[in-house]
Length: 529
Image (cartoon, rainbow, N blue to C red; front, side, top):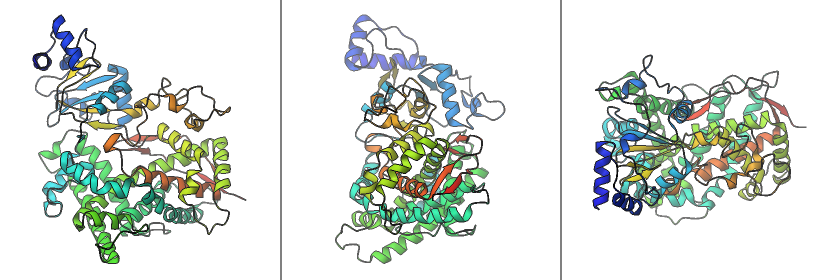
């Protein structure tokens, strides 16, 4: 305890040398630390704060040294400038940021996250739920933004319906119907040159919303209509979800001026949050009327929403979970699906290999649905999804705030001192982990010794804490099964109907709260004979 007290105080004061006896105690308290030297928190590399204004000025437009218009590029630049652990301190209104780019350090964070891992709170969402609409949320922050025991209670309610494979399997044929409708829409949208229109990303967003609404709201919103009206609830929901993500990046990752004055971005954010709340409430109410007796026993065919209401018979809680599921499942799933289609279009050999796999598994009768047993046989499909998510990850990584001291790379980080940002996505593009990292090589994900795999290091041989697209541990994304299932049915139906080609410049990605394509998704879709 004496050594622990000294270390904590040394870290607060600055650079201090430890005695030989102290070093031995350090090794006992922090087994991952070298006994030779534990360095204080203040010595972690990073941009030096200025007097009074700290590092805040770096985030300002025009005069700042940080360009966070693209979060992924900013992350990579910090790794290049400072190394595998970086500290950004003295940011008014925020905790320090410690950025981590090493799988061993990432593993150490997860091993010390505790029973109820504490995640970065999205302050803009918290403001809306606590200050703007406390009448509805009643202090409840939901699955995404809650921490501690309240998070555990919410996750317990959601876990069984969301994490059970049989519930996800129930929705495979329903998602397949959505994917069939998307194929019909794509045929209607094609130009005379067989290319998709400039705004085709919006159509993929519609598909994602239609798919997740089946689960979260127990309904089909009718998103896949040709020329969907701008004032329709479906289009309003799509616009709201996308803008909430974009605006939360402006509000939560830049200087929080909105905490002092009601900025234009805050007002827009509130408007879009209200839209999501209004539409979600309407359809949860309709679903409850359709279900009728919430006390009726569950059956194998019981919907996701019915199972949730069975465990938490509160309309408000069901609406909040529906909102969180939609926010987490539209832009994320749409971006991932768009990039899988893109990489397949750019890599005709991989596309043909996947097409042959799909054709050998899916029933030839177009009136028959894809089922979970079909998806389970598509190993190359899963490899293509993983490779696309590696090359174009939707999220940059994960964040934790620890309530205990931890030593990373021999630096002592006092408890609750900083938010620890684990930038896994930056590791995905490094040849150290994935040889020929910039190339689309799905074979790297297949464990079998396939002769055509051009790399000698398979993905399963990489450090297990490098690839974490859905998070880790008890706070892993609970909708992972649904997201993969939706994308797999879409890719299968698209390949059965079309040969994909790409005759445009390479797609450009932008990384804010999420990463996704900003280039027009003008795929060329050639009908299969």
